[in-house]
Length: 215
Image 1: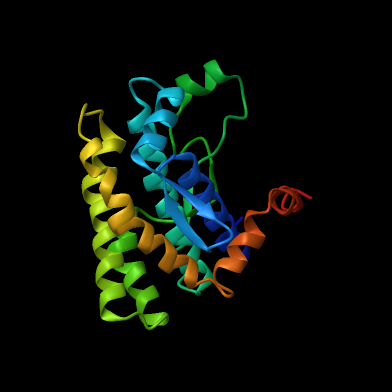
Image 2: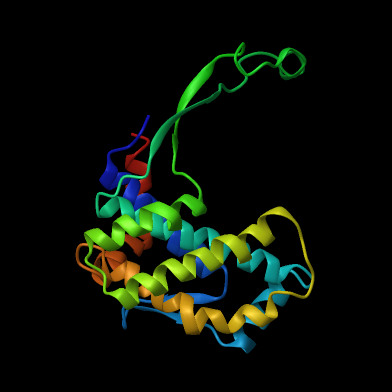
């Protein structure tokens, strides 16, 4: 079942910011109302604790996913509805061994799920609509679209499909020089800007909000 658009919007924004923070590349600063990039020393130290070899890979995957979630959530907040209803194979309802042997997508039943599209569709279509709705300046539009195409086509596309060693360190500067400003811009387009995000990021309120969806 598809949630009302305002609920889905909040879910995507909140989840996105948590993923961004978990990446150890940025931290949401509730006092300044901006994303603060971590220093290279802080980032490297955090990654060594996360995973000595694959820490950067894990961090960048979380960062790109978080940036995607955040952008999709802000689109939904601004009534740029990117969701579609999709039929997918239903969950197993019998013995798993029997289900696996007999599995045919069309024969095993289907269920409705919400499809949020790809990051490619985001920068090719939905973010352009969002910029129109928010009357973004030419500079804001150019930076936002360029940042997300770079993230989706170059960084995310690489990290999501295979591991390539020793390629992420050179991209660290992009966080402070490009991506953080675009994330701040998206947050500024929330109804009350950073204050809305501060309210949504309160841990007790997040637990209450998520719990209310299961009641």
